[in-house]
Length: 243
Image (cartoon, rainbow, N blue to C red; front, side, top):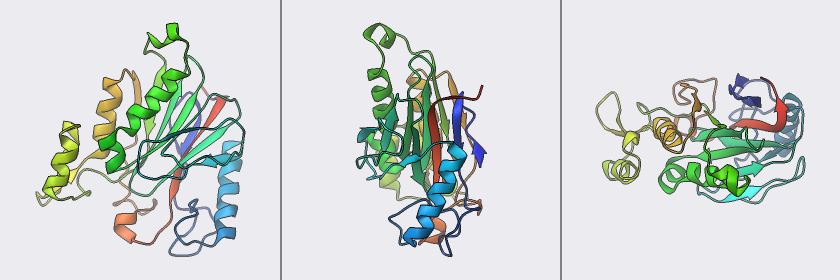
């Protein structure tokens, strides 16, 4: 478990410590990758124990749709952004090269869990999450941008995420800091750097970026490296202060 570094209970899981067999070994929390349902259920229960509350895991569609969770353990609608302002609700963003991003608003106590890959970055998943958090503020509170904090979890890095040149430019047109190159000089995307930059532009004074590349570090799931594999998660709990 990797501490997210936020003022509330928030962390990122890794591969180890679960019940799944290879190629999903072992702490896979995704239900859509072909893993045994009973193993995934056991893994999700173990993560919920770590969170201290039943985790509502998002069902990603590689977009910018937002869903609010209002009850602990509630099954959310299909979305790449989950938000809540209900104390005791735990949210989980699954990923395996894409970014799990966790957010906290100290003004309202609301939290968000975001799944953001290339399409999420290009289309504005971070922006959608911030807009949803700000909508939970009063009109007077929305005039301020203080109190916002975020943590970017393990994801594929700019040296490893090779893409066609046209695809790189499509994303970089909106997010110039996403433009990168591999060690061999071929076109690549640095999605964590783009997300970090965008969070700063949106007024986040506190951004934690975990510089762990899922493709390089076998402690984490990587779809690009392994093909058929599991998913780890970023988890955040509303109303459970740790700092």
